[in-house]
Amino acid sequence: MSAVLSVLDRRGRGRLSEALRVGAPIDLDLEGGLPADLVPAEIGPLVRHARAADPSVQAALRRWAAPGGRDVPGPAVTAILPASRGRPLGVGALRGQDLPVRILVISNGVAGPRRCPGAEVQRVTWAGHGPTRQAALQHVRTPYVLFTVDDAILRGAGCLRRMVEALEAGGWDAVVARQIPWPDSDPVTRSRLRAWTPAADAPVEMPQVDHVCALYRTETLREHPLPEVPTAEDLAWSAGRRIGLVPGAPVLHAHERRAGALFTRERTIHRERQRLGLRPSVPHLPGAMLRALGALPLGPREVLRHAAEVAGQWWGGRG
Image 1 (cartoon, helix red, strand yellow):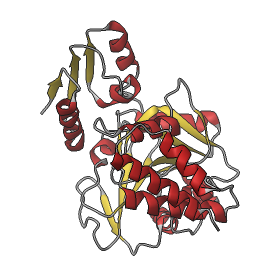
Image 2 (image 1 turned 90 degrees about the vertical axis):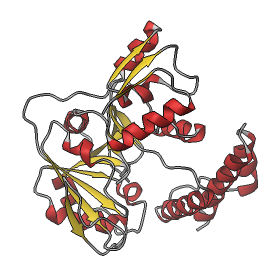
Image 3 (image 1 turned 45 degrees about the horizontal axis):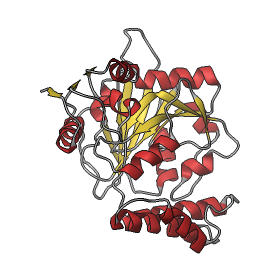
Image 4 (image 1 turned 120 degrees about the vertical axis):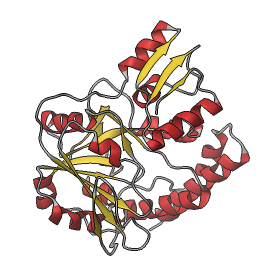
């Protein structure tokens, strides 16, 4: 079932998000322009067709449309998805790629799925992000492997092919997709993702690989395995390696910002940064907190979330 949206107000964004979750196509027929907080590079990949009264908006939306598939042979890829909940959101999008994709769901043996239509399920004892992903390589027989997560959705049948082509053309050790937020994501999430994986005309270098959606040559991971760390294995693996961002390969992914989860996540990641000898992101907590909160014209909830995030960075980097 498809739907047509003409306004991306709060209700329209909710309808678009729900359609994306269930894999239903959406056509956008804008009566006016895009709201000020939305940009074509984030909305274009989410809709099947886009029309706008403003020709410049319409052109921008179509420029950033999800990459279509091509009816030509291509190499096979194994997609590895650790899952700790029900059926991963992105299985349908992976099955719709124009390359042959084997989907391997790594279930944590506790809350993860026992069955997943369209994918194989391997029940494992969770040993941390790095060791568990690396162990899954024993099941891989394809020349390429994609590490992704159970709440990420590739956009467009040609998304994975673009990543493969960029990996080979750029001589990268690994490439990552451009992350775009959900239509109803909060302003801070939008800003962070735009800075982390920006829209661009061609692949650009990234500071590290990101396992939200990252493609490797399988032989690379066999020769240089992921480190045995409980988290931030993508950061640790990236030291001394060339990582490319593929802006033309969009993946839908964003988390709701919750203070407790933000503190824990940032503390864990910055402990790993400290172990790797990287400079602390927040060497002095009071000054960093004042600068961070002073730059936020937001309500009390977002102030709390941002404070938790900065505190986690400081705590993790203390050593």
